[in-house]
Image (cartoon, rainbow, N blue to C red; front, side, top):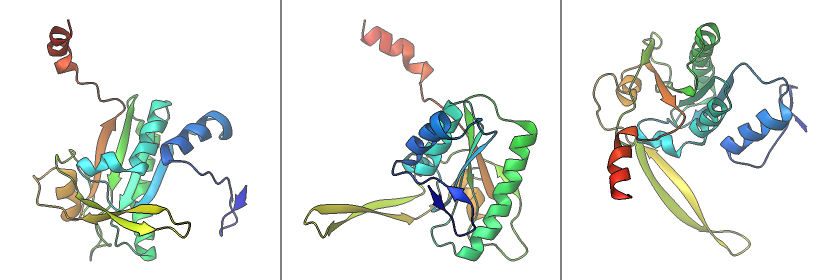
Length: 199
């Protein structure tokens, strides 16, 4: 049990974001919430990099429990002031989800563009997930004071140009990207092929 600087009561957990949502929905948050917003995360979750995201994992876990969810992020270089503008963008998405709902087993991956552009963001764009990584991940090896070797994830956003309508294209062009994602990754098309192989 803890109190945030704003005075809001909170519960702190040592767990992955998805495990935190699982525990919260099963044991802590009663009644069940109408909406889960994971984030706002510093560091975009674009393209295939979304699969590395704890924020996206938390939203996916909420959707798996039947709770509409949004994963929200902005650039790694974002400042405290940028968070205010990003929160307004994410609030606009949340308001629409509350009004119109989401299909079962669906959640939204929302990426706010680089720092608030002059004249404001260009608006929302419903996007596809680019089929490339939104950045490069490497690992820095460090020595923990205990003597153990620790590998620290270093993620650098390096968005190569992508087709118009993709999540990467949208944020690079000043739009807030809203990508519908789903729970489960079963490839139905491969079922018959594999059944023949494993006969």
